Structure formats: C-alpha cells, structure tokens
Amino acid sequence: MSDVLVSDDDVGFERLDEGKWVKGRFDSSIRIDQPTHGVGQTHAHVYGRKGDEIGVVNFDGSSSHGTKCRLSDADADALRERGFKIKAGNIVEWIVLPDQPELPFG
Image 1 (cartoon, rainbow, N blue to C red):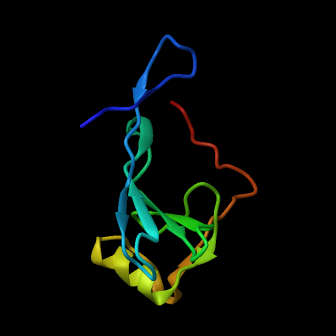
Image 2: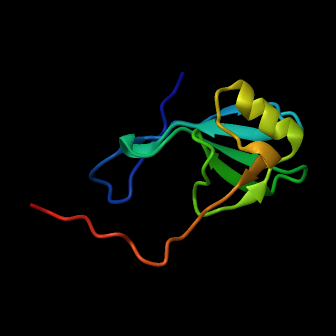
C-alpha cells in the first residue's frame, strides 16, 4: 500500500485519503469521505450516470460544499443504510442565514 502526500507550499505535507465508493443508483455512484483536517462531518459525494456530481450530503443530512439536491430513492436508501440522516423526500438543502446571530461574551 502506498500513501499519497500533497503539499501547497513544499514545506508541510498532508496525506491524501480517498473516500470509500459505494453502490447507490449505479455502481460506485456515491463516495463517502471522512472530514478533512479533523473538522466537519463524514459526508458523501453523489454522482450521476455520466459522472457529474449531483450533490454532497453530510452525515446529519445537511448539505455540504454549498450544494442542494434531491437524491434518488436508491441513493438515499444506500446512505440511510450507512447511518446518514436523509430527510423524507430525499431533499438535501443548504440554508444561508441573512444575518449571523451574535453571541454575548461575558
């Protein structure tokens, strides 16, 4: 087994971990990735028949990478079987709040 190391500045390096491909609507139509840099959630990239990315969904069912989509039943079921919390209707949304709430510091 080989490790692939990537670097933006030729000083620090990071190991590139590829995701796990799973069957949804098509063979290998879903790639499940772990969070990068210890931040975020496990998430899945869902691809269509021609390899185009349909959307990215977090483990909790929220959208990732600013995408929104409606998953096919087969893709949604494949993710649910792996513990993803996909909403009824298979809708994955990204909601942008107009103003960020301010938290009191004290």
